[in-house]
Amino acid sequence: MQQGRVHTRLSLAYDEVQTVPRVCFAKPWQHAFSTSLPKLSSTASGGREQHSCSMSPSTQRVERGNSSMDVYALEGQSESGGLLQHSRYDDVLDEEPPAFRRHDDTDLGNVLNPYAVGDQEIVYQPLVIGGPSEVAHFDNEFARVEVVANAFYRADSFICASAVHAGFLQDLDGGCGVLKLTGEQPAFTSSIRFGIQSIGFDSYFPKSFGFEAGSKTACKDLRWVGLIGSAAHTVVLGLFTTDAAVFFWGSFTGLFFHVALISDPPTLNADSLPDIYALISIAVGRFLPAAFCAWVIYRYVALHSLHGLTAQVEKTLFWLGAAWVGALNNYTFDRLPIQRLTSHDIMAQPGALTTLVVIVVVIVSIAIGQAWAFRMEGRLFTYVQLYGVFAMGILFTLAIPGLELRIHHYILALLLLPGTSFQNRLSLIYQGLLVGLFINGVARWGFDSVLQTPGELIMDGQLGTVLPNVTVVAARPENITFSLGALPMYDTKTMLNYHGISALVNDVERFRGSTIDGGNITWTWVRHGLPDHDLELHADWPEYFRFGYVTGDQLGDYTKAGKWTHDGSWVDMKTGPSL
Image (cartoon, rainbow, N blue to C red):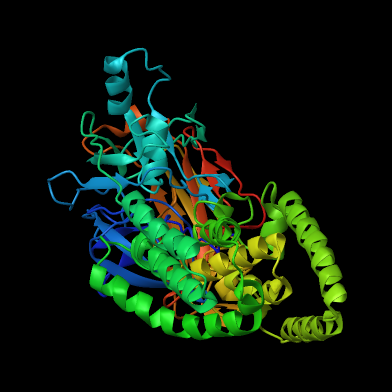
């Protein structure tokens, strides 16, 4: 079960004199990628989404709610000296096409908070916007190359999911390749290809990418080599060691450093290739407190199961095999449709409630069986008292105002492990699985707090802030004028005084204005056309507008998108916030 993932909208950042705007693409994915690509993604504190791409260049920090994100600035020289009206988008990336890599059989990742694409909102699916310009089939290799060459994706799309959708990579094989930066595109098609539904967008976007046909290479994933070595080490311990301490500590240490350095390293979601020295530093820092927890697990739980156990094959198969299943959580339980154990996600994510019910039924059934075993051994009352203390602690944390309980999978493992202190086959399986889950949670994510603020849980989601009351003053085919209301605006929920207002056009911020005297703000937008082309040739595009309050570096929610059609008519935005 994954621990929370963050995806953020595009935003516009100004330098201090507000003369050269920069289009900032928040990074929308995380996971096991290594590239030298421009950053098109964003992470917030505590966020988690597993993908297979990462980016590198310069970043800046943007605050939203209680979370922060790194953003990469793609510069655009404004002809108007402040807004990006009729601006010319020039790539400031190196001329050399950026390379990327996708590990084989890696989760393509889903958007976990509603993500606005024009007047659409997507959630719980890969963020892939666009695709091949025409639906085609790969009848031969030439057709495959042609389709790949004509597949264009909005710049905030997940790179690896887009590569699979385009047919450039296969989901199970992974591979390396080179991106093709294709600049502004007038529209993006929607299609279902290779099991991925892409989102259509019927207007322009300032940046896009494709894939350089013929650049795919079969780069080798060395994690499988590491898995063979680590598995061999633990199997030898299981088969040829009868001492409980040697087996437990040898297996625990081997599994911990395999997860931390090979199968699910902490920096695989970062913006550059993992640095081995940084990985070792993080792994050792997390191992020391994890070793203390492991001593408690061994002394009060595992020793009951492993001491005097001479069934070497069964011990290796049941305890160690289950421990590997738990430790490789990013390949096993992460595929279940429960990404975060929060009430909102469980009710909103398709399949999450059913999966949770099945999990609860399984856990309750196991608990009844283990309770019967405790009763037969005369230890039931002791463990009823222990779990009573656990229940009281959970109820106490739920009652703390301003904080919310977050049961991470390493916490779940610690809570359930005391109920596995038997020397039988089923208890060996349960105990090994829970030890593996504990290892994966701590080695990958560290000791994340069991109590978190609502902002940490929401991360890049909707905050429920006050929304601007925007009206259209005049709408023509050539331009549109908005009345954005008076400032400042006080929000009773966040207790913030918003002194500015932001306007997004096609999901990119094009205006940020403020007033000191509390007067009304109006703003006029002139219809956009492709660079070096006549406006009339491209006046059939609709444009989508969203508005939100801002003060300093704090952004509130944006409205849902209103639509300005090609004939100059205005379609009002629906009520409620968007991302």
